[in-house]
Image 1 (cartoon, rainbow, N blue to C red):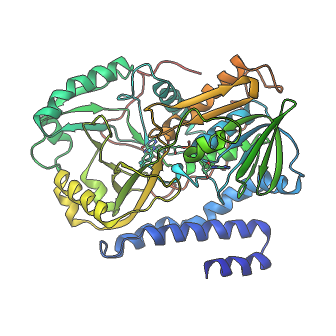
Image 2: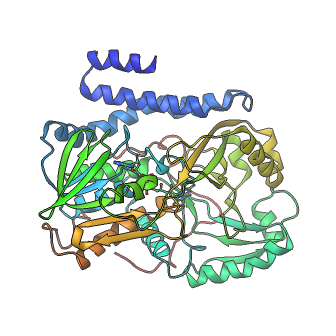
Amino acid sequence: MNMLFVWIYSRLMTERSFFILILVNCWRRFLALTYLPGHSNGQGCDAFSDRFVYKMPWIVEVCFSVLSEGGNKVMTQSNSSADVIVIGGGVVGCAVFRRFCLMGARAVLLEKGGDILSGASKANSALLHTGFDAPPDSLELACMQAGYREYLAIHQKMNLPLLETGAIVIAWNDEQFAALAGIVKVAHQNGVMDVRQIDSQEIYQREPHLSPGAMGGVIVPGESVIDPWSTPLAYLVQGVKHGGRYHFNCGVRHAGFNDGQWTLETEKGTFNARLVINCAGNHGDHVDAMWREPEFEIRPRKGQFLVYDKPAAEKITAIILPVPTAITKGVLLSKTIFGNLILGPTAEEQTDRDKAEVDEEKLKELMEKGCRLLPSLADYSVTATYAGLRPATEKKEYRILDYPEKQWITAGGIRSTGLTSALGIAAHIESLYRQNFAPLFALDPQGNFSGPPCLCCPNTSQGITPARATVGLSATANWLPAGR
Ligand SMILES: Cc1cc2nc3c(=O)[nH]c(=O)nc-3n(C[C@H](O)[C@H](O)[C@H](O)COP(=O)(O)OP(=O)(O)OC[C@H]3O[C@@H](n4cnc5c(N)ncnc54)[C@H](O)[C@@H]3O)c2cc1C
């Protein structure tokens, strides 16, 4: 029925309106799929829909008035050759595309799905991490902190929201309590100097609605919440404004390298470029396998979430984190940028790389866990559920690999922290290119970073909660090393 609706309208409407319709339709379908009857009185879902879904048409209108320039031109071109092709329109691909566009490259982004965020990036916890618990001296830590710093530097100019809640890691038993000092030590080693241990009295002063029994905690003032959708969209829009082009429904099926030029075969024909950057998330190893034995294997790890009605968000101030284990960071409670409260994620290995389904049993477990942390959660409706797939690999580290002789770079295994680190990954990839590759095309030495920002950048949370709200543990991020 949906498709028939879209088809009829596509005949009647302009091409731009057609895309708007598809996006709105997909969005409504997403909500319909994730709505959890039986756990809601319907009120919360209606409130969520009224305030967000039905705002979408004008939001999408704004996006596409900007994007149509980049998209439509590509469609009328005969897929001419580019300097750089970015494969994958997740948050990492969008950030890399933006960066190369700002550096003056002729960049094209190819996305297999019907829109950006067709993979891991469409469903995450939406936290902007400080890196307090990242492996010390790791590439992941460096990219996270560079990404965090750049997001703080550009978010106001790009009309992107930031909810500075801070986080508290809470110990509920002796073993977890014993781990707190180590968490502070690692945080300080990672340069996150405002992290400190607190006692149970301070926990309950800050979070009076938590269950009794918290033994102590660690406060992380810089952890924040952002909008997981507007952010990558803004990166794409800014890239398009700087001359970049994109194609959706354009999965890369084959890659061949000849005479210093890549030829990529896709559903929409052939594309050529001097440099290819593989940002294909859960299919990153498959894309590398088009021309070499991949150096890593993607092992998707699913995370399921519950979204509670907005009044539930008043029951916490900060992001409530558990003491992590060797396998998972564990289940958290957090406000969202749209004013709801989320509970999750789970951590479940699976082989399917595309299906992120919720299941009742796990959701019930999550709910019970949530009520053990915050008993009053039982009084609130669950308005939606969702799941995302982390592009994990056999190693607990990012797999950013460069092959200068083949003019190819892979950003693989960007598992649990890619929303934060995307801008940092893009900067890292730019420096790999500048340092290790013979120049393949002209780049601006400084980049056009102070050039036109994304003035009418879409911000899906605008008008829903304040674009910037400071609560409790406001951080200045003075601890971050100075960067560009
Ligand atoms: C449950 C969960 C919670 C998380 N919480 C956080 C958090 O709080 N903070 C944080 O910073 N990060 C978080 N993350 C991590 C973050 O979401 C990921 O690291 C990030 O989304 C990975 O982005 P990506 O661009 O590498 O991959 P993806 O988003 O998967 O993008 C890859 C894209 O490539 C496309 N593609 C694949 N194959 C092809 C092909 N052959 N041709 C063209 N296109 C192709 C796909 O369709 C997809 O759109 C979380 C992740 C999950 C799942």
